[in-house]
Amino acid sequence: GSGSYQHVILFPQAKLAFCGIPKAGLTQWLQFLRFTFGAKDYQGFPHVKPEVAAMRFDMLREHTQMKILNDPEWKFAAILRNPAERLLSAYLDKVASKKAGLRKSFQNTYGLNYTISFEEFVNYLGEERQSCPVSKKNDKIDGLRGVDW
Image 1 (cartoon, rainbow, N blue to C red):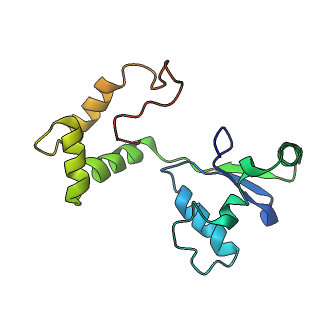
Image 2 (image 1 turned 90 degrees about the vertical axis):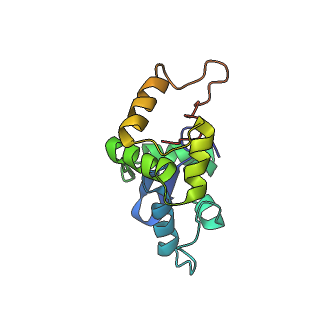
């Protein structure tokens, strides 16, 4: 799925439509959903499991989607992540990673032979993001060359 509703997961028994935001606990929510269904391997990678696909809002027919959207008993929720925490997480995961492969990948991408400081990382992001990150060529989000934040 893709589009506006690609990360909306339904918890039908609770009449809850949860908008999962990548990098803000989406995987854990999907694992929890699978736990509520009694999946024995609920702690596994949930994004490709058939019971998760069956609960995705974007996979429903339009008339069913409209019924849910217009039903006052359904509640909608999203969990937002503190942007400062996400920024620190990106730095720790991609730049200062204890995993040499991740750290070297970042350094090679940017032509570095050392691990930059958090301050340098923040300054670099500020320099790189001078305009809206949506490419006018293809209307897709233009990520920061491998740093998904």
